[in-house]
Length: 127
Image 1 (cartoon, rainbow, N blue to C red):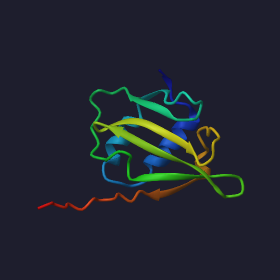
Image 2: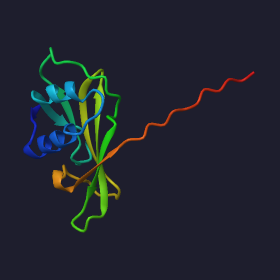
Image 3: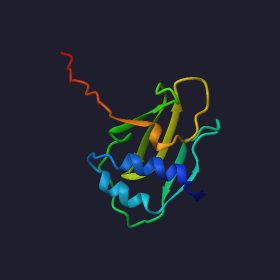
């Protein structure tokens, strides 16, 4: 494990600056989190390991209901960022590309925030 880099902290802080149910405990966890490689492909995805065992647990679903679109120099969408939680704890910060290129952790200025629309599956019974 290692310290979270400045770029990773900047993206995590920008994401946790958004308002959604369960964000406050995640903000508290983020103050003492470590990182480790999250993917073997070489992208910027990291696993997050909260270090405070007494940190409050979040009620947020995974992924959290806010995601970012990553824009290139021309303002075109090139990828995204998602935050995952597990058992109420920060779990991973995923960086993905819309192309076959590996994307590193973007600068927060390149992020546009959106709410994730959760799909609910209607209950159906068969008789």
